[in-house]
Image (cartoon, rainbow, N blue to C red; front, side, top):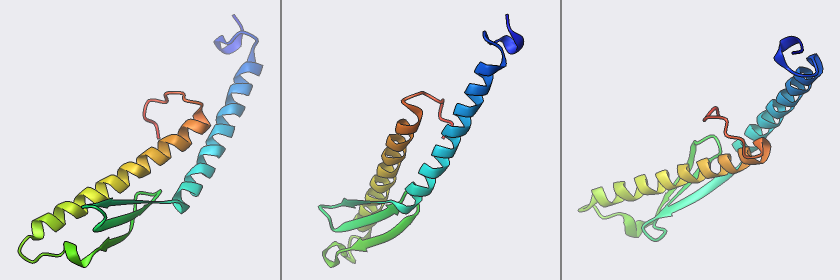
Length: 112
């Protein structure tokens, strides 16, 4: 067996390292691009809207006046939570889709 346990010697290991570095550079670029992207989610038929960035930061929350009922604050709280959770779920989907383009569907065990 060749040095390092790889058939063909060090060349295969060098190729693997080069590919890993290229993938790492693409992932860094993708993360920077995702930070600029936004997703929008809503709850209650659109009376609560949330915009989140690819960094999972909430950029804005819009609440329609008809959603504000002083006698039912809990309902409004639930709508805000639902919209925020939906927005964060959309960010996860967006990140996973972009990551899949780079990794070619490889399962990297939740590394990212």
